[in-house]
Image (cartoon, rainbow, N blue to C red; front, top):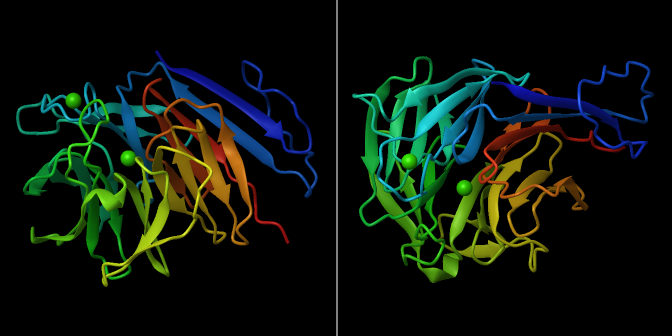
Length: 309
Ligand SMILES: [Ca+2]
Ligand SMILES: [Ca+2]
């Protein structure tokens, strides 16, 4: 059963989001913006961890851990969701099928026509167009591979959050670099990484948000980390994305919120009172954040306000 709640708010008003469909307000003045909130719930998601916009197919891919985040149970799956919030295929890639291994899929990234999926101690490859398996790259000693990033040269990175199933430390915190042909190297490791979770790149380099220490820091090939937001007012950070207006968004389980930082550094809460907002995605075409809610088995899609000025 598909349950969709679609509502439209105007920022100029504090109208509460009601049940049922609300027609778009085409009379909105330029000083207001329509903020669509699409909630996709009760569709069969099972511990959704990450959402990625496949910009070529124009669909949203949702990774579903299904069960414990470190259990090698081969029942994880990837869903395809239309930008309107309709499930096109719940188990597009399905660990329970004979030729697919997928235990607890988390971070997703597309490079060329390959989809990469972080899965406990390996990154699994699939054909972007068909979902067919296309090999894997495994990381010796990893316990909780979490998010994937790609730098300006097309090199790929994956975080190891160093966590057990109950989110206590497994002691394997790391940042790995890997090549599409399977060469791996450990760029950084150790408890000082703070249980690194989400990773994203902009023109200045790579940024990591941490689940353990609630930090956002930049790293470079010199192996030096630098705190970008000292004392970030949030805990248990999971996802980070850069937006087309020069700002960024990050999600916090501790705050039950998705925070927006604009290009001038002003912070606000784009989404509040959401349980376990995990690895957020970004639809640059529509300027939307895509938020998987880990425990409630939902995905929330929300418009981002246009930059001022
Ligand atoms: Ca699983
Ligand atoms: Ca994550």
